[in-house]
Length: 223
Image (cartoon, rainbow, N blue to C red; front, side, top):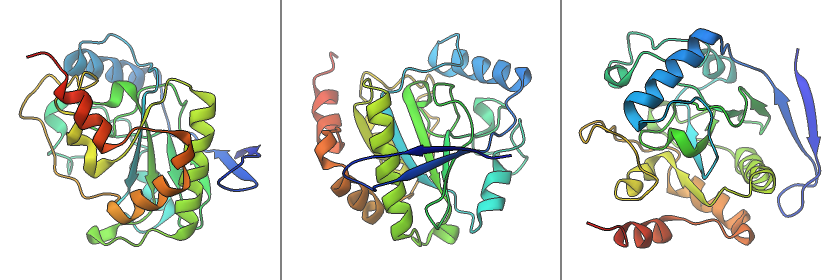
């Protein structure tokens, strides 16, 4: 069953809906998440204080198959590229279909595994699409991502940054970056510059920090 939340927002869309469609997050998955957080970030918790919103694409063409990718509690064998950091499966707080329909998959302040180095402070939004690395994200997804960003910033005043997954390594020298392994990185292209610029243009009034601010803050870090 889908639980419906209707939000009236200004600036992005007159009406925006979030539907709850939880993925399994049992005690075992929570324990694996806490183990991941301790090993990678030195944090003994599965909860977060959101500071960053990270937008993605799923690289899967359909909503149902995209949702199914997050259901298993442990990584499938095909994800050997990230398995060295722990067995807990990738997850994300929100999933947006090509028609803009938006689903909440897990509690917003529980840690999901979706971005190296920043899971402890980030809320992830996956967009259905990007199969074979092709940017096929829709105008409806742009509108829904912008509305979702507006909703999250209003709910969590601690949120300061909006980035695309392909931009995550800009944080490597930043105080928020806590990844313990200097060699644990993956190269990402999602969701691409076009999509990020379109969403940023819609939420410009929120004053969220982007790449320039991240670079400036990183330069101020002590040696």
